[in-house]
Image 1 (cartoon, rainbow, N blue to C red):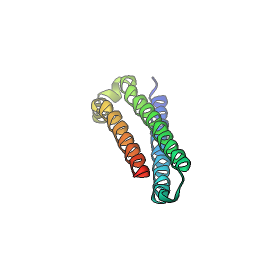
Image 2 (image 1 turned 45 degrees about the vertical axis):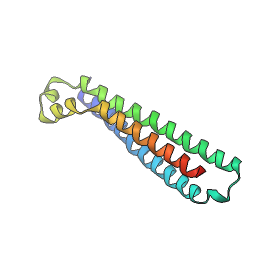
Image 3 (image 1 turned 90 degrees about the horizontal axis):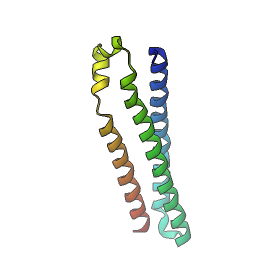
Image 4 (image 1 turned 90 degrees about the vertical axis):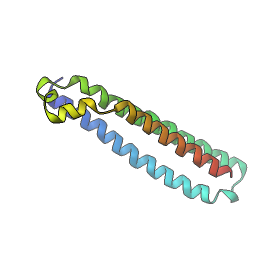
Length: 120
C-alpha cells in the first residue's frame, strides 16, 4: 500500500475511534443522569433506558473493534522503509488484540453496571 494512502486510512480510523469515544462517553453520561432519576420511572421507561444502554454498548463495541482491527491490520501494509524505522517497529509490535479485548471489556462492564444500577 502506498504510504500516503496507508497514512490516510490509519488517520481516518483513528478519527473514528476518537469520535466513537466522544459519543459513547456522552451517551454514558446522559444515561447516568437518567439512571439517577430512575426510581421515579415506570417499568416500561426503565426497560426503554436499559435497551438504549445496551444498544449504545453494542454500537460502541462494533465501532471500537472495527477501527482497532483495521489499524492493527495496517501493520502488514507498511512499506519496507517505514517497517525498518523505529516508529514502524513500535507500530508492528503494538498489541492490537489486547487493545480490542480492553475496549470490549470496558464497554461490557460499563453496560452491565449501568443496567444493574438502573434496576437497583
